[in-house]
Length: 155
Figure 1: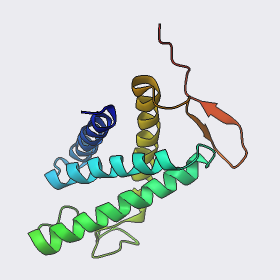
Figure 2 (figure 1 turned 90 degrees about the horizontal axis):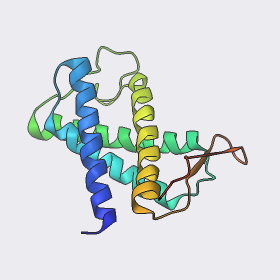
Figure 3 (figure 1 turned 90 degrees about the vertical axis):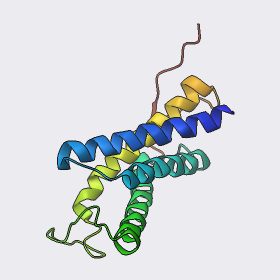
């Protein structure tokens, strides 16, 4: 098994567990489908992150990742509601809810934090564990200051 496949498995399991833990902590329960959605989102965001330049401002990367998560959340919510007959969450009582109460813009901030964690952790795994790339850095705005991960020490 290649290191890249192992990394995908680690990200999938880690963020699947992370998301379910957040849901259980705040709602008291979660659904197995949400573990899959979070795991798939982390792998997709990492693949996209590997294709774009580190010079792309980190806030823009986070916004793109957030829309990926929202698209997966909507697809899984529609699938669960219309195919499985289960409403995994219900935002109908929230202002600005969309798509039968399956999306709520106010919760996008949670997905932004999750996206930021995915980007940084995936880069850290590549740099510190896989030794696949040069030292990762992030910029907050175009042509802005570079913020590097700490240098690896391989002694």
